[in-house]
Amino acid sequence: MSIAEVAERTGLSKDTLRYYEKAGLIEAIDRGTGGRRRYAAGDMDWLAFLLRLRETGMSIADMHRFTQLRRTGGSTVAARLDLLAGHRDDVEKHIAALQDHLQGLDSKIAHYQSLLKAQAGTEPPP
Image (tube, rainbow, N blue to C red):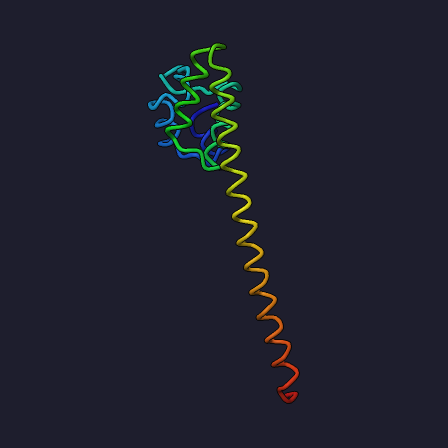
């Protein structure tokens, strides 16, 4: 796939894709005729994983650390597991905080709905 196709499929800009490559988050992409990037299925799988990490709030620094560990090979499996497990814990904490905020909003919405209901009962019909 071309960089334009990958940008469209992932929602990442071409500049972000180039940055990810330059920063070492993705392997150097094979170049087709004319020197244009040609992304393979494996590249897309890795990008999907990086997007999942990014969308769950992992920092670029930690994404880079994970990528470097992955490139090092099998001896880093425990370190990769630790990094992902720590990130998962952070995501769970964030979800719990969001649930708490959602309950607060629901409570406030119920309060205003009850105010409207009370107002509707006290005002004369039009």
